[in-house]
Length: 126
Image 1 (cartoon, rainbow, N blue to C red):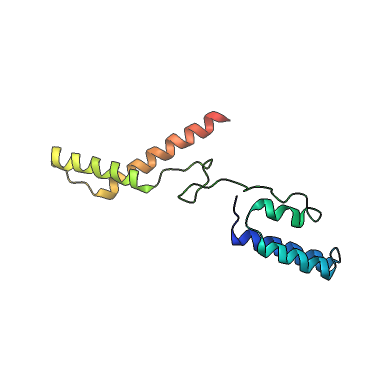
Image 2 (cartoon, one colour):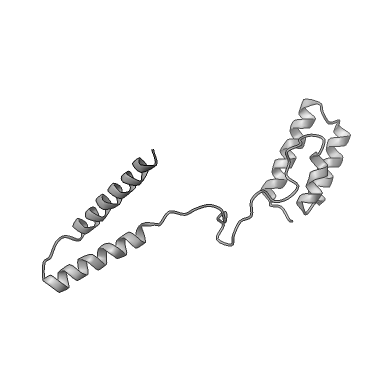
Protein backbone atom coordinates (compact mmCIF):
# COMPACT_ATOMS: atom_id res chain seq x y z
CA UNK A 1 0.00 0.00 0.00
CA UNK A 2 1.29 3.45 -0.90
CA UNK A 3 2.17 5.88 1.86
CA UNK A 4 1.69 9.61 2.28
CA UNK A 5 4.42 12.24 2.13
CA UNK A 6 3.96 12.81 5.86
CA UNK A 7 5.00 9.18 6.45
CA UNK A 8 8.14 9.78 4.42
CA UNK A 9 8.94 12.83 6.55
CA UNK A 10 8.37 10.80 9.72
CA UNK A 11 10.87 8.18 8.57
CA UNK A 12 13.34 10.89 7.52
CA UNK A 13 13.09 12.40 11.00
CA UNK A 14 13.73 8.96 12.53
CA UNK A 15 16.83 8.60 10.36
CA UNK A 16 18.09 12.08 11.30
CA UNK A 17 17.56 11.32 14.99
CA UNK A 18 19.37 7.99 14.69
CA UNK A 19 22.28 9.69 12.93
CA UNK A 20 22.38 12.47 15.55
CA UNK A 21 22.36 9.86 18.34
CA UNK A 22 25.26 8.02 16.70
CA UNK A 23 23.25 4.90 15.90
CA UNK A 24 23.91 5.41 12.18
CA UNK A 25 27.13 6.40 10.48
CA UNK A 26 27.00 9.10 7.83
CA UNK A 27 27.34 6.45 5.11
CA UNK A 28 24.41 4.40 6.51
CA UNK A 29 22.33 7.55 6.95
CA UNK A 30 23.00 8.65 3.38
CA UNK A 31 22.17 5.20 1.91
CA UNK A 32 18.96 4.89 3.90
CA UNK A 33 17.90 8.39 2.97
CA UNK A 34 18.40 7.55 -0.71
CA UNK A 35 16.35 4.38 -0.25
CA UNK A 36 13.67 6.39 1.54
CA UNK A 37 13.19 8.84 -1.33
CA UNK A 38 12.99 5.96 -3.83
CA UNK A 39 10.42 4.03 -1.77
CA UNK A 40 6.74 3.99 -2.77
CA UNK A 41 5.00 1.58 -0.39
CA UNK A 42 4.95 0.77 3.31
CA UNK A 43 6.73 -2.48 2.51
CA UNK A 44 9.60 -0.41 1.08
CA UNK A 45 9.77 1.75 4.23
CA UNK A 46 9.84 -1.04 6.79
CA UNK A 47 13.39 -2.33 6.05
CA UNK A 48 14.81 1.19 6.17
CA UNK A 49 14.00 1.55 9.87
CA UNK A 50 13.65 -2.11 10.88
CA UNK A 51 16.68 -2.05 13.19
CA UNK A 52 15.94 1.45 14.51
CA UNK A 53 12.40 1.13 15.72
CA UNK A 54 10.35 -2.03 16.02
CA UNK A 55 6.92 -0.40 16.08
CA UNK A 56 7.02 1.06 12.56
CA UNK A 57 3.91 -0.22 10.74
CA UNK A 58 4.34 -2.63 7.83
CA UNK A 59 1.02 -1.47 6.38
CA UNK A 60 -1.33 1.48 6.57
CA UNK A 61 -2.27 2.13 10.21
CA UNK A 62 -6.03 2.71 9.84
CA UNK A 63 -8.11 2.53 6.68
CA UNK A 64 -9.75 5.79 5.71
CA UNK A 65 -12.91 6.19 3.65
CA UNK A 66 -13.30 8.57 0.73
CA UNK A 67 -14.71 11.22 3.05
CA UNK A 68 -11.47 11.18 5.06
CA UNK A 69 -12.99 9.59 8.15
CA UNK A 70 -12.05 6.36 9.83
CA UNK A 71 -14.76 3.72 9.21
CA UNK A 72 -14.76 2.68 12.87
CA UNK A 73 -15.37 6.18 14.15
CA UNK A 74 -18.91 6.81 15.30
CA UNK A 75 -20.42 10.10 14.34
CA UNK A 76 -22.85 12.08 16.41
CA UNK A 77 -25.72 13.72 14.56
CA UNK A 78 -25.21 17.35 13.66
CA UNK A 79 -27.50 20.31 14.18
CA UNK A 80 -29.33 19.97 10.85
CA UNK A 81 -31.68 17.16 11.99
CA UNK A 82 -32.49 19.15 15.14
CA UNK A 83 -33.20 22.25 13.09
CA UNK A 84 -35.46 20.30 10.71
CA UNK A 85 -37.47 18.84 13.61
CA UNK A 86 -37.84 22.26 15.23
CA UNK A 87 -38.90 23.86 11.94
CA UNK A 88 -41.48 21.12 11.36
CA UNK A 89 -42.96 21.56 14.85
CA UNK A 90 -43.06 25.34 14.45
CA UNK A 91 -44.70 25.05 11.02
CA UNK A 92 -47.37 22.60 12.26
CA UNK A 93 -48.21 24.80 15.24
CA UNK A 94 -48.37 28.02 13.21
CA UNK A 95 -50.38 26.54 10.30
CA UNK A 96 -52.56 24.17 12.28
CA UNK A 97 -53.44 26.29 15.30
CA UNK A 98 -52.56 29.82 14.38
CA UNK A 99 -50.43 30.15 17.50
CA UNK A 100 -47.26 32.04 16.70
CA UNK A 101 -44.54 31.21 19.16
CA UNK A 102 -40.96 32.29 18.56
CA UNK A 103 -38.99 29.71 16.61
CA UNK A 104 -36.22 29.72 19.22
CA UNK A 105 -38.75 28.49 21.78
CA UNK A 106 -39.07 25.13 19.98
CA UNK A 107 -35.32 24.78 19.69
CA UNK A 108 -34.92 25.37 23.42
CA UNK A 109 -37.63 22.82 24.24
CA UNK A 110 -35.96 20.20 22.05
CA UNK A 111 -32.53 20.80 23.58
CA UNK A 112 -33.94 20.56 27.11
CA UNK A 113 -35.69 17.28 26.27
CA UNK A 114 -32.52 15.87 24.68
CA UNK A 115 -30.44 16.87 27.72
CA UNK A 116 -32.90 15.17 30.07
CA UNK A 117 -32.87 11.98 27.97
CA UNK A 118 -29.06 11.99 27.78
CA UNK A 119 -28.76 12.57 31.53
CA UNK A 120 -31.12 9.69 32.30
CA UNK A 121 -29.23 7.33 29.98
CA UNK A 122 -25.90 8.22 31.59
CA UNK A 123 -27.24 7.87 35.13
CA UNK A 124 -28.82 4.48 34.31
CA UNK A 125 -25.37 3.07 33.34
CA UNK A 126 -23.91 3.87 36.77
